[in-house]
Image (cartoon, rainbow, N blue to C red; front, side, top):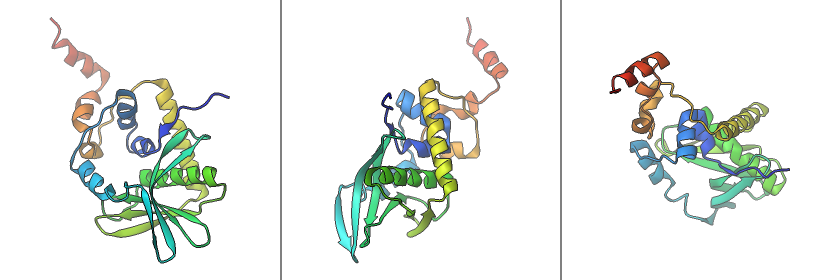
Length: 204
């Protein structure tokens, strides 16, 4: 059975936000900063330092590498809480206020799927810590969320295997994306007929 190429676990979040964003990152290597990425880096500054600490009988494991051969994913968890009964709870740090986003929940669920494969026991739930509001939100790994996550991983792999960057589909969220000036969604999402007309303007 051929070994799957390991995809970055964080790319799943990009894919659910925008497949084109994920493709530009993994296929063409584009990276860029904006205020959102800078704030996100600050939030992760402590969690990204490998190590552990113990507080109230809970061991906090920071920047723990995780992987899944079955799914072909690898990455790291911001924080894993190991409780006295041996249970594990992944915690993902996000910069904004306490709000639910499908891409964040799927990223956290993918971490749990990796942990389940690595340690051989079920992970029932995790949490997203929202730095701006300093509140955490519990995420239950329901059959529905697990199904959505595995489907998204499969679709992401199909996108990568196809080797083609999908066309842009402009939406309000595009302006918040760090790749906005690279993707140029207002232009690249134009109908093909307009695109051909625009190209002819530069023909000699």
